[in-house]
Length: 323
Ligand code: FAD
Image (cartoon, rainbow, N blue to C red; front, side, top):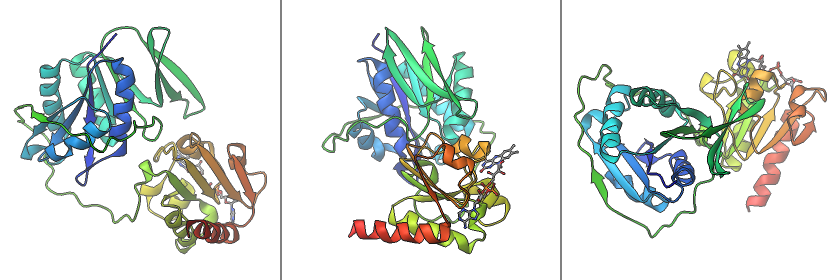
């Protein structure tokens, strides 16, 4: 059944996040030959329209308003509801980001619809749309079949490959008018924590350190390796609790969920709560002094050794490969 599917293009610092392009790829499957409509919401976002076209959107609409310069649940839901009223979609896909997790249930309840959250795959099988999502902190996967009604899902970043970019593509961005009013939250200012380099939740490579890193300075070799690999630094809660690094780096059940192509865990024992945030990474390399450490059970490659010897050796070797 051909469907019209809306995809929310999520921007940060004036650029669309990768997960928006991954959402377009998922939307193409859901659309089953129908139309994929990219949606931009913000103060001046029209210029991002071509990016959505280049990754496969068939049409792009935008709601622009100074009151939408920062995300608020009220503002964005009013904007999105105006788009939904105009476009009357049969499917909606968001990224399973902080914004998506907040906004999608709100919209779903307004529409009286169900929601499949945190999907890692979607396919058409036997005439049905089948979504796969992790359950029990990633220890198992369940399949959700959508038989009828609105197909509404959030997709986990880094799991569904975006379509190949067609750099020559461009198109119109049509404006949807929406009255943005009665906002219960007004963001006056956003003060960012000084974070360097690549965004952890979207990084293709993550070098994560645990209590075995032993100090704030102990993270330096990990940062160097992450830099050489173009990746981000993450941490276990053990390392955060010990004050070796900021909680924004925490990966796990009560931290960020990451699914990079390569996850290097250094000095991390592999507690179940940590595995919940990284065990779906494509390739896992564990470095630990203790050959019995639980992390080796999920690792594709295990190195039994002292991280302060192993990490600099890896960094040097990867540097050579880059030359
Ligand atoms: P440890 O378990 O102390 O492991 C340190 C490891 O470093 C050891 O395996 C040791 O052999 C190794 N090591 C030491 N020195 C070296 C060296 N020089 N070279 C190589 N290896 C070395 N944890 C999370 O990570 N994320 C979460 O989101 C999270 N949420 C939680 C939620 C709840 C409700 C609870 C109860 C716990 C949660 N935890 C979480 C904590 C979790 O249970 C573990 O305590 C934590 O993950 C341990 O961190 P760690 O592996 O860094 O430390």
